Length: 409
Image (tube, rainbow, N blue to C red; front, top):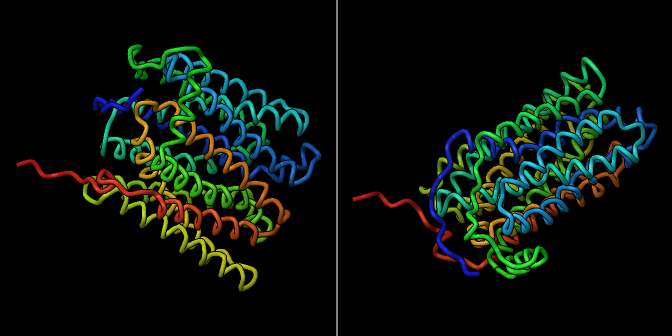
């Protein structure tokens, strides 16, 4: 199958909001219960390392689900697998509520990640089906802005729930939120991949798209730029409860406030990046983002090496760090998907799978330092940020990287 220019059909605002809510499942299912990780370890009579594995299991589930369903949707269409995935994700969140052991909780988190990833991978594919060129970057940026609200609201909601109940109530709330997304999908998301544009052949042949997209050099470069930046972000996410609570002494409630405030940086950065799309070349914006990410990560590591960190300088650096991540995500994703629009399901699947596995790798790396170490977190952030910048620097350039809107005569 050869690439073809995508019709720029666009999407109505309610559909954009719905798709953004699907991509927000990951942040919601992670950030809402981060502050409860120490309490989960105590309640289920387990260790910090096992509690961290609930994060890893979720990320591995997300990677596996995207890898399986994304290419399959290039053959079956997007809508039916989307409905099935969102429904099962809501049900798996309910199972988490009643998990009596850490083993069952970890297994259910894997299922929750698997089913939740279906909405994430297909949301990106639907955007690629429905837009082209700079419009894809704009829409990805808008989704990032909406999606960025999740890391802000999720810890606040989680903290409120913890103040009035146990960690199990958090998963009741998550199930309700996902159920609302299901209703939105039913009413406002239509099939975006016409039957004549789908891959033909057996079910197994659908996965040839993964190999096809992996061979596209520029796709690999932009994809790795994005997922390595995510590895840096997830190093911070998985280490932040222990840094802010165990080292700096914040309560669960105060942690959620601080974490939510810091997450606002992604929203602000995504807003700025979206406003610049069409005015400044996407690749130039991406260079600024990766350079900022590496610089701030190095500054944070240097500060930590000076001794036990204090709250205010740490928060300033972490705010700048998450803002840098927001500068990378939308543009890198748009450039990657633009290289493989004709097999958007496979392209979205590979991006999401590697992203999730990168998060699954980052969490145990940070956990190696124990319940109070912060240097492993900073070292992981620097390593991932450096690799992200290197990936972009070695990605071949093309004229489309520097496209901007031309004023109409």
